[in-house]
Image 1 (cartoon, chains in turn yellow, orange):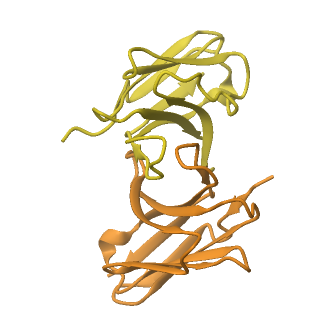
Image 2 (image 1 turned 180 degrees about the vertical axis):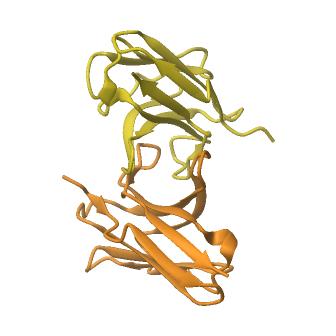
Length: 114
Length: 112
């Protein structure tokens, strides 16, 4: 079956511009997560959605970052007024339910802020 | 404050030999541990996991060992194959369905 998909695969933007990153989770998965991986670093948790519950935004690094999940499926991560330190690979993952530990990752979006 | 650490950034092993990747954690509330494998330009792929109620879990060539008293886990790959060359991430969770806390990764190179 189809895995987690993300778009775009690469995004180059100028400092100060806004960007939107998209994630399509695996069909039927109710939990969705955003992580980012900066160069040479591990994965850093950003935000978590579970069904219709309020998202866990505890990992968002600043108020320039926001995310939404429409209809319990597709999610969009928005970064406003991008900074060079926002350059990273942004990874989306989904899992079958809140009770499932295993998360399935998409290929990521490589964001470069110039 | 890194709660999950992989102290070896890289490891080189000869094909056919054992690869041992290590991971240490500090949060005693973690109750589930996972290993992910990542190839360049791809997302991490789930490899194997272990619950804190166990000390060993085996799946084919992959075995994960957990030492709770030492807050240490390791992934053994035997025999290692060139296709195992990738970055391996250790991850931990203290609450089903919530975020995973990842280590920094270890790059494994298996030489033919």
